[in-house]
Image 1 (tube, rainbow, N blue to C red):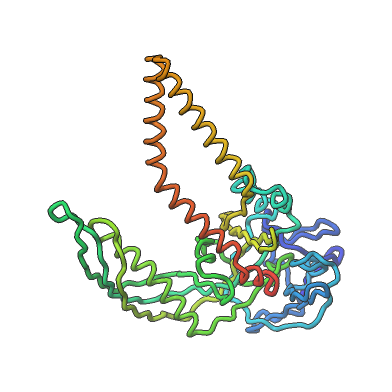
Image 2 (image 1 turned 90 degrees about the vertical axis):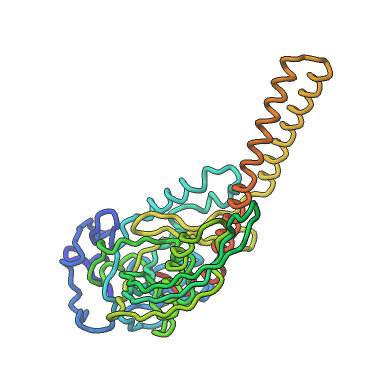
Length: 384
């Protein structure tokens, strides 16, 4: 529950910039390890959280009873009511926020909002009030892993491409592998947030939650083992593919087995969530609260893209028309220059075509993850 300032009884909020608890009333500062809630049992397997329900949208907000509980983090409505106290499993450790809300906003602006194709109404939403600090549950595992892969690759044989098959097998150990502990948050999204730096972790203390929201793990041991196996399989298979000669390397089939060593560590990781609606579609941009890494992509304004495309097309037609006029009038110097320009344009266009298609596919894939309705609901129902 909330810990109050020893000087004025005001509420204490954790500030990532100073790594201290700060009193908004009198400005006093305390390190979390120096503050103790006399009502808290630090030896208990559980700790208390307060659950509030928004009367406007029905969202449940889980907090440690700080000032942040006075409004709904989903719709911003102030009409939220305390509903119950919930006991949650005490994590083994926590990686505190080091990136402030303002720094998270600047990271998103720097990556996306200088782009002219981003809609103005989306840019206007990138303000601190729309960013939510959420502690996301992770399990950190050590594992012994074995895998056998069947792979293929295209190699040259008498000037022809021939498909050949290969086998790779091995056993290895993985240490400190983070596994997202929420079944709602997409594993691909959570992996993109990494790395989290574990030497910055602290023993769990509820005081680090002050001013933030938190989610709890809903993953069973079976689910954890499956997620860990899939994660290690991807790491192993990606490395195996690098050993295959030729091109168009492909994983044909795999058999793998995992043995989780020791007890998994239950950790809380800091993430800033920026959620908004655009044209009736949900979008969620995530920022690693420890490193500032931004995950996701923004919607773009189609009219501006078409405008840029038509402008380039008209410019190309103008260059083409000028060249033909020069050829028709037998301006040798200009005709030669025109031929040179056309050659360069064709060469650049050809060189950029494949990377451009790959880049567009990557953007579309990131956009699909950013539009994930499950992540949007995660922020609504399971605020960190």
